[in-house]
Length: 161
Image 1 (cartoon, rainbow, N blue to C red):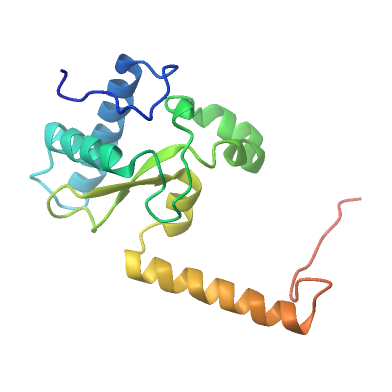
Image 2: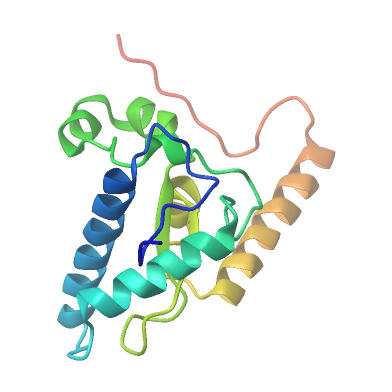
């Protein structure tokens, strides 16, 4: 058995080599970012181990929403396509598995796996702050919907001529 065996929920279209490439790429990116934040003890090997552990424990699901992630999308992100197509491109990759820091990246490697969309929304919030924000969004939406069921209050649309 390999050290970083591709989890069983990752489809066969993502080969062992593809999984290891994703794992290494995510580890390198997070080490680079965390070293800039002052974590001089961050290593690619420790991060690979922590990310693999988080992936395995995820059982293929987003830690925050419970949604099934689309592991077939691993390795498919293109920065160039993202720049060209913007939102439409990103929407197609909403369930792309991504690696989220549990802490601020200055301590021991500690990650959760979640959808790219979720990670983008969470950004650098703590888990508790993110949950509190989500609750405020839902509460506001529900209050606003009771007041005005036909449109979203405060929404403006600009049409180009």
